Image (tube, rainbow, N blue to C red; front, top):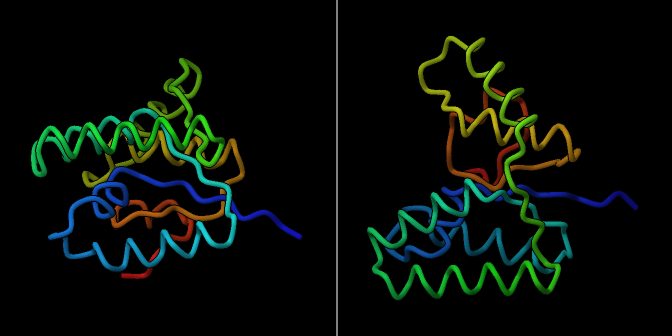
Length: 142
């Protein structure tokens, strides 16, 4: 049986928390599906930090604090794999970033892609269409 690995980016985290977001219901439904299927979940500190900043700005300090605590609990219970940026990963992502002409691609996209390659992750849980150019399936289909 093949283990499905899903990387969760900041747009997905934000959509899960922000109830007014256009993709909130789709995010909740997909997140519940991946939790029920015991999928391996991955994210990185850059995406979590970005989500926390946006949640604090749009939803308030208390919601951001609770989200941060929930992430910490998920990491401790081994439900969520959180990676930290290494110099090597950053260097490889930067090299890729500077080789891409598309102005929509940000350095964070390249960091995600390099991590996905390294960990053989199957799916990106995201609402960021710029990630489609890397050829990794984006879910949910919104």
